[in-house]
Image (cartoon, rainbow, N blue to C red; front, side):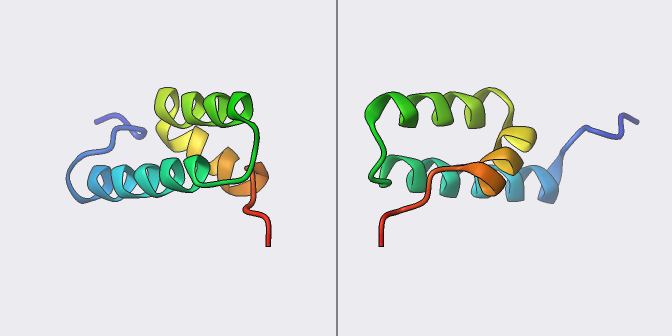
Length: 62
């Protein structure tokens, strides 16, 4: 069994978190190019991309 393999509930949770990240990225006030790069990172590297976005991602303007 692969340690990094996500199935079942873990995969579903990761999918939900990635969708939340993508919606947050799209609704942010950043430029389009920045949004595209963040979306690609989250889509191509789901777990690592989400963690990087969570730590250093674009924040909404308050």
